[in-house]
Length: 288
Image (cartoon, one colour):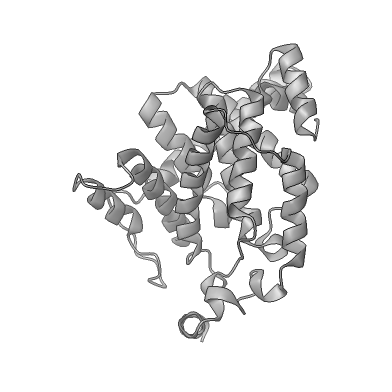
């Protein structure tokens, strides 16, 4: 696997392949192993679709009461016919909420790349699938592309909120989703990298401050924001907008910013929203 954007772009152009194809071929020794990997990705997509739609029509109450029924509320709001964002983005945000609500209630999710960012990829893939009636093959190549972007992020930075803040979690998930979206929409490998770069640029510096250390608040809002970030970054890249800084350099910046964050803003429950009087009160109520 290459770890520089231009090397991957050059290879894909030379071999007339997508990032997704490169990722699958790199991970498998032969065609049989490729089939196994694709079958695993199919199972992941099934779980993602389940979590993204689980609470759209039947709200599930969390034990803390912090993120109760947001997915259903968004769907009800959509039915009013007078939304600012439009039905497609409302659906995507609803699906991000749904996965976080499913997670909070011990339902089955795909950590993509973490539990705290698990709503972004399902919301992106399932909303795109429904809008454009995509085939399984198209979805699989989108997923493989997202995985490839994740591999590069993991090489230069990391996904842990405790190490790099929420930029490392929801930022990485947004970048992965954006690259996959561009692939599914017929964009080029270069455009996938620009979309992923723009996503990280948009979220660089975001702290990790979950109340009571739970993957609920403000995580659910950052997942909804993350899928919208992925969508608009994809649109920018598909329109020809480019990131001046190459993707791997953006990833290095992501790591550097995370390392310079004070520990109080890296999932410790001390600073940010977790450190507010309300955040501390809820923590005591939850844990005694």
